[in-house]
Image (cartoon, rainbow, N blue to C red; front, side, top):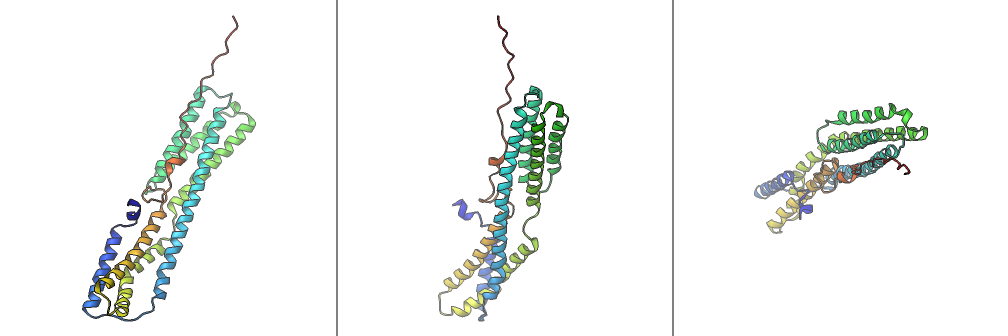
Length: 259
């Protein structure tokens, strides 16, 4: 049942009440006219469909970026963990840095406010500094691979942060919401005009249903707008993309000496 009520909120209640009030006034004061509603439908449905489609595209693009980011973190960790020239303490430090970076970024991307990204960037710089100061301990091919992976991680983080703070056009969504609240004043008198002999409950029901559907579509788009906040049912399951390497590097046992 929750998945059906997820797109119902205070705006749904407000538009339903507004539709009831407007319908009552139209019937009470005999306000009715016949207007072609096609132009008004286009004025609302087209921007709603556009923003919903773009919101879904942003969500799918974010899923691909998160997958690539987790893969880059895993490749970076295992490249350094398998290095024979790094000490156990250095491998444990790599384990800590990558795990911390992934956990911090997941927390930051969930929040509605834009804060914490500077901490994530500092952790990326920490990893790069770790690699840069140990060039002599990392073979040439591995070093090039690790530097490229660090760059890929930074690029993925910045792309995801860009998706987080830059959504679909704010003015277009505001326009949709304003027009949804205006629709009852245009649609209801036409409904009263076209159904003069029908039961009143049918007129009220159709008026409320029309406003409720439009607001539900708007709420659906609103949930898709931020696919990271874990509020909507279609939000990205961020826990699946967090790097969690719980297995610590094994301590190399000294070779046994012959008796």
